[in-house]
Amino acid sequence: MKTKVLISQIPNSLTLLNLMLGSAAIIHVVQGNLVTAAVMIGIAAICDFFDGFVARALKVKSEIGKELDSLADVVSFGVAPAVFLFTAIKNQTQPVIFYGFQDILAYSALLIAAFSGYRLAKFNLDQRQTNSFLGLPTPANAIFIIPVSLIATQSILIEQEIIFSLFSNLWFLLLIIPLSCWLLVSEIPLFALKFTHGAGFSANRIKYIFLLMCLLALILLGWAGLPLIIVLYVVTSLIFKQNF
Image 1 (cartoon, one colour):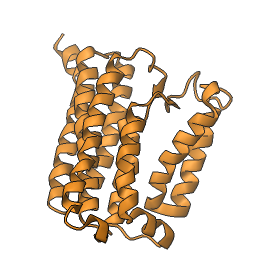
Image 2 (cartoon, one colour; image 1 turned 45 degrees about the vertical axis):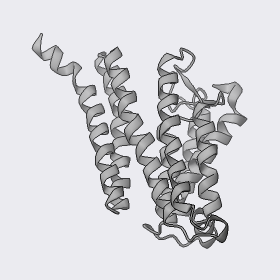
Image 3 (cartoon, one colour; image 1 turned 135 degrees about the vertical axis):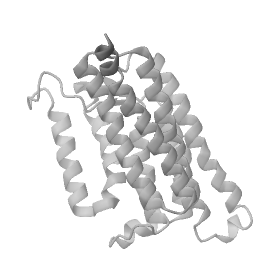
C-alpha cells in the first residue's frame, strides 16, 4: 500500500518541481539573470510534459494532480513570462510618445498572468479539450514570449538584424500583450502533440510536419526560431483543423 502511495506521488513531485523552478525563475528575472531564468522555465516545461506522461504510464491520474498542474502552470507559464515581458518593455529605448509612461505601461504585461490563470481554470472545466486545445496553451505562450524578451533585452545575441529590430521594438512588445491574452482564451482549435494510434505517419502527419518545421526553424534561426515555432503551431492548426 505504501509503495502504491509513493508511486502515485511521482507525477505530483514533477509538478511541484515545475512550480519551484517557475518561482525560482521569477526571482532570477528580478535579479537580472534572464538567461538562467529562461533555462529554468525550459526545465519546468519538461517537467510539465512528463508529469502527465508519467501519470498515464503509471495509471495514477488524479483530480488533485490535474489541479496541481494548473497551479504550477500559472506560475511557470503565466507569471514568469509576464515578468520577462515586463522587464523587456521597461528596458526599451523610450519613444517620445511614451515619455514618462513607459514604466507604467510595462505593468500591462501582468495581464498575461491574469489571462493565463483564467485560461487554465477554463481548461480544467472544459470537457472538449481532451485530445486537442481551444486557445493557446500557456506553455506555448511562454515559449513565444520568453525568447522575444531575451532578444529585446539583448540577454541573448542573434545575427538576424531584422528579427532583433522587430523584437526590440516597443510597439511590437506592447502588441504582444492583447494578442497573447486573446489567444489564451480564444476558441481557436489547436492540435495537441499527443500521438494517436501509435507513432504511425498517416494518423499523425500534422504533428510530424509541424515537428519538421520546428527543427528547420531552430537550425536556421536558433533562439529566434522559438517564437516562430509558436506562430507555425497556430497557422498549422488553422490550416489542418479539420484533421485532428
